[in-house]
Length: 65
Image (spheres, helix red, strand yellow):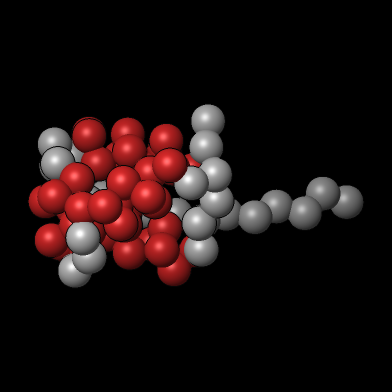
């Protein structure tokens, strides 16, 4: 699953349309659609999108010995 597809699921679980999420982000609906088609996004975009959906986020990294 791409990050865009994952973000689309977050938006849908929040019961928001692309237009509603766009208004929360301060961008256009087409910008949200573009994010949802991407295979990768900046961490800052990821955080803003998740916050605009009213969701929580957590970023983890592990290094094995």
